[in-house]
Image (cartoon, rainbow, N blue to C red; front, side, top):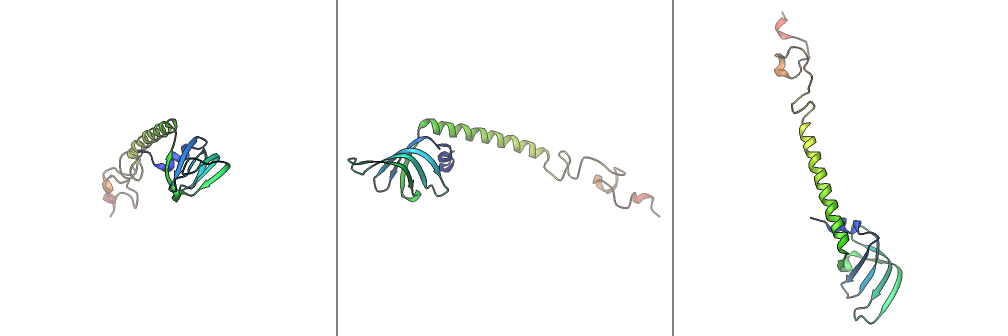
Length: 137
C-alpha cells in the first residue's frame, strides 16, 4: 500500500497534471508538497475549465483542499512501490533481530547472559546480594 504523501514526496521534480475542484487544470513539475498536500509547481501551464484559455506561470502554489485529482507518471508510481517493498523487507529483518534480543539483556533469556555466584541460588537470576545463603549462620 502506498500512501499519497509518500507518493508526492517521491514525485518531486517530475511532471504531473492537477485538476482542481473548479475545473481548472495545471500541468507542471512538482517542486514541493507539505503535510496538507499544498502543492508547489514550477513551469506550470494553467488550462481554464472550458479549455480555451492557457496561461503559463513560472511558479504556482495550489492549496491542497482545492485539488480534485492528481495524475502522476507511471514510472514514479512504480518507483514508490519498489521503495515501499524494500522498506518493508528492511523492517521485517529488523524485527527478527529485535526478537532475538527481546528482554532486558542476554540472548533470548531474561536477565543477562553472565551468571554470577552459585547457579542454584536466586532462581538463576544472577545471584548477587549478600552471597550464598546456605553458608550463613
